[in-house]
Length: 282
Ligand SMILES: Nc1ncnc2c1ncn2[C@@H]1O[C@H](COP(=O)(O)OP(=O)(O)OP(=O)(O)O)[C@@H](O)[C@H]1O
Image 1 (cartoon, rainbow, N blue to C red):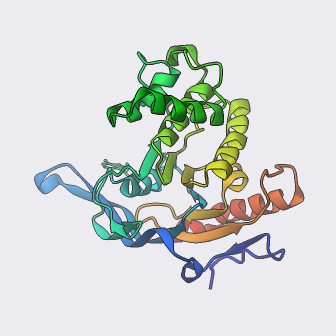
Image 2: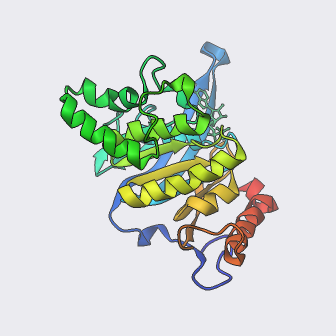
């Protein structure tokens, strides 16, 4: 039984028992991650994640929501294979994750960290394909597709320094998609954008997701963004020992209307959880 009575208006929002999730592409059982700081007698262990259970289906737009420092990026990094868990099991496509893989791609908050400043938009998008030894014609066909999908047509020859923040993020997303991963891991990818650009990019992301049918795991601490984007929203408890303690189904139709009564109802439910005293004692 859920700790929070999330269902107040029929099917709009409800808590999903983990058992009801079918054939997951990502399966996480009793996952834990601790970090050690310092060495010798002064060494201290900090248990960021503990007993994380989570199943994510193919094609889902899944949100990881929680306050700053609760361990969202750590969980994403474990799924990406950038970090290794200290306890528990993590499977992607039925395989144990012990390193990064082509089927998983990370989109970071700051595209500058991942774009090559000396390559133009098309060359950035084609970079991974060139590394694989793909021929020019084939590369161009793929980059054409993702340039169009990401709304970059007409900007192919520009360099990162000539692009706005939103455009750079589009290039990062197009580049990741060009490598055809099954899963996009997005770590607050819109967090550095101004409010207007962010709204546009949120809409674009929903469109790209519905056109590509990729599985997306999207990290945010913004409740409105979570409700706008997520099909399911995994709510993390405050660390240490953070876990996904509640999952909400969000069945509002896309594209979602921020001003609708239903949207605000879900937003309020989530706000209620984070303001509840119980939340601080999970
Ligand atoms: N490599 C590391 N070594 C030691 N501690 C770490 C390391 N990476 C993360 N942590 C700690 O783990 C905790 C969770 O960090 P994490 O970045 O996962 O949180 P977050 O929820 O993504 O936060 P934010 O929303 O601010 O990005 C923090 O206390 C952080 O200091």
